[in-house]
Image 1: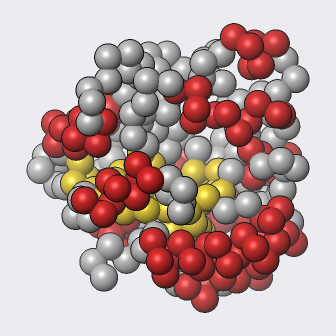
Image 2 (image 1 turned 45 degrees about the vertical axis):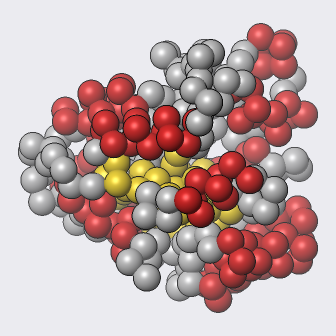
Amino acid sequence: MTMPKDVGVIDLMMGIPTSDPKQHYEFLKKQFMDKESKEDFAFPVEYIFKGVPKFEDLPDDPIEFLLAQMDHHGIAMSMLGTNSKNNQSQNAIAAHPDRFFGSYEVDPNRGMEGVRDLERAVKELGVKAATAFPCGLSPQVAINDKKFYPIYAKCVELDIPICVCAGIPGPRVPFWPQDVAHIDEVCWFFPDLKFVTRHGCEPWADLAVKLMLKWPNLYYSTSAFAPKHYPKDVIDYANTRGASKVMYAGYYPMGLSLDRIFDELPDVPFRDKVWPGFLRDNARRVFKLDE
């Protein structure tokens, strides 16, 4: 159960540090109803998270700073959210294609315009995955809503995975769009879709495991959870039948420091055979990083 060193970790959720962390969550403001979320919180889950990274004295080159952090913790590659307007992420990926690859955040409310933008992102920007935050959309869209279906179909056509937040979200917005039970219908109707859950699936982690047993192309990533809080059901599944289904994803700099993540990771009770797949090999396969 010893976490290997020098494995070349692949992080499936990372961002470029900024001195203004509020910008990561500006899109959620229109949904907030409580005063703390609207006015007080720099990070909308401050009531849960401790030690959120802050960068008052960020170096002039945040990309080089991020690379140094990755090197320090043995992270070989990271997935950055990007789009045609996000020059910083695009610059990082273009300058360091061996260290960064892109994902594209979809909005099913945009209909076919959003589908075409996803296709352009894959063909012109080279992104490796779509991502979605159903509770963060305005208006919100459930995981199994018909508005998502054209996007799911396009992901199958493009042969890319989609990473979707599932479970009760930390920000104070309604949770109903991310009920893990919704995933069952999507996997049934799109058996070729590679669907990767984000943000824990709690309080339905046991249901997520049952669905992963049922559906071959359903996967779990550990984003937004400190390792000491990984659900026991998911750890047990990885240690038994799910070694190829569970993948590491962090939450830096949005909510967790790499120091905390990598201090806690060695204490996760994965079996020896699970670690390489969890830290690297499963992501390489699912996101086709060797192509």
